[in-house]
Amino acid sequence: MEESGPSMRSSPQSRNLGEMTIKVPAPFAGISDLGFTAQYRAQNFNEPQRDVAFLFEGPQPPMRRLTEVLQQLSETHSLTYAWTDPVMLSDEIVILAYRDRSVAGQRLADGARIADYVLNLVRPVVFTFLHDCAVIADLRLSEVIEMRVSAERKSVVEFALPLQDIVQPNGERLLWGVAG
Image 1: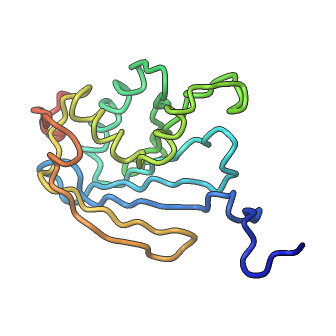
Image 2: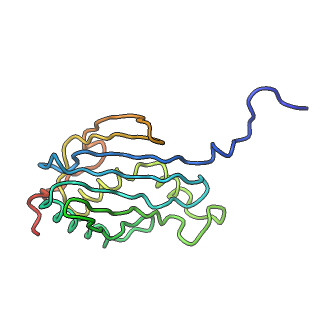
Image 3: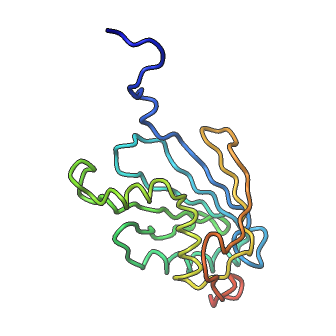
């Protein structure tokens, strides 16, 4: 007997995660012209999360200091994720990547840490980055974090969150005051 109406099976398209971009224009306290973009590439839902690229843009002096802070993040160790070494593309552009390690060397069907995988997949990596900046690097963040989310080149949502809704406590070091 054939069903009428929508199919209960998922289509191949529904098993894919589309490309997504999250822009954060001024996350660091005291510097309004330094921001970053997190870029998620399209992928299938059942494969390990691809690296999420972060592109930082801003004026030269704080970008050099930011690169030192990002290096500190890349030296920390977590079972579920890692930060790559930052790379300065120019005096005003730095890249870094978030690498999911929750299923390192395993497939999801092999009993990998599925809860960690799902958390890493659904929680915006931007929140993990901001947390690590404040908690690990003791970097002071702006009290309000603005974000612009785009999916497949279309604006999805713009919002601002109080920092305490993302991470507590805030760091103490100002980016422009970090020794360099």
